[in-house]
Image (cartoon, rainbow, N blue to C red; front, side):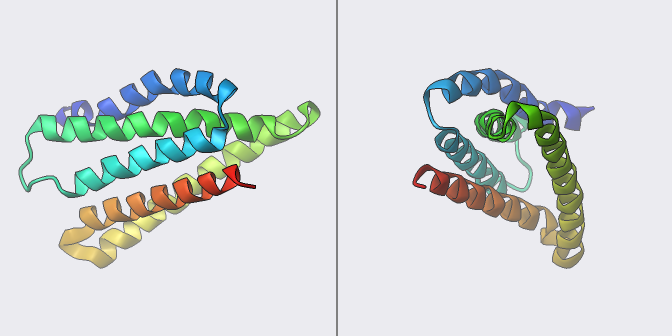
Length: 149
């Protein structure tokens, strides 16, 4: 139960920032908002890497809250862009592709985490956080590159 309370700030902050990001998407390019969100997520993940061996609960909570603050501005504009890029008659297919991409990502992500834990031994958690941060930074770079096309 304690672990559940420690990770709760992430979805709460995602839920709090997603509507704000949705409103920003009307006025600003989704690629910019997504890039900023992914950069904040990467910073939160990097800060998780530097947690002390026995952190205070507050140290975990605020770092995960920062991850959620970053994920909200990524998720909403990204989904909006994916769902609205095609013609209205193909919105069902766009939704299906969105769901398929999400499930493939979850599956491959879970497999990658298992592989990293298997190869990293005692440093598995740190290695997973670093990998997650690297993926967030690659996503931010890719998203920001869309801005200049």
